[in-house]
Every structure is written in C-alpha cells, then in structure tokens.
Length: 140
Image (cartoon, rainbow, N blue to C red; front, side, top):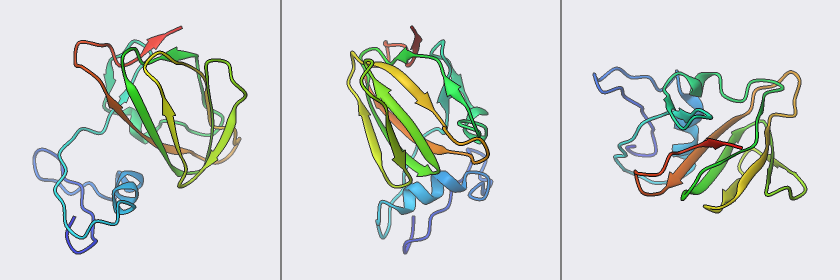
C-alpha cells in the first residue's frame, strides 16, 4: 500500500490486483497510508489443506459448507461483498453484509457457513491465528 493505493503481487512479481479485487478492497479498508503486507491468499479445505485456487470460487451463489471446526484457531472473518450466513455451535444464524465481521473461538463448531443468495457471489476474507501444528479445518 502506498498513498492509499493497494497492489497485490505474486511471488514472481506479477500484479494480480485485478484478479483478487476483493482482497485489495479489504486491504484498502484498513485505511493505512503506507504498508507492506506479506501473506498467502488461500482457502482451507474441509481436510485442512490449503486450496490456492479457491479464493476465486469461494462462496459462489448458493454455496453451503458443511459443519466444521478450526481446532486451536482464533478465526476472524470480514465480509467483503454480498451476504454471508454464519453461526457457531448451533446458535441461531446471523446474516452479515459487506463491511461486517465475525469471530469463531478455538473450540467452536462452525455450524452454518453459506451464501444465501441464489444469484450473487459472496466474498469473505478469513484470518486464523494458531500454532502451525494444528490443522486449519476439520469436518464435523
């Protein structure tokens, strides 16, 4: 980020800002004048493996993920665009809109994770904080 402008580069130096527009928009929401952030854009599969292609298809219209947990992970999420239906531990679900956040404690079961729209994509960004030894996602 420089002077409020966000750019996303691959390891080989290609500018992929347009391919991950939702990630760039989320970074822009930090309202930072200048910053360098290093990371990976991934989506964990139900087996806890990294899927590097999933960010482009994650939460397409009508997508529902099965119940799962993130053992030992503090999980924070931010809705970039669309509407996201979210619930943990069998609690009533909540509808979250762009700009809203959610949190999953380390012992929680993510019981509802879905895009309720039949024709619009939902984009979320998830940050997990945990020790590397823990699998990122485990199906219930």
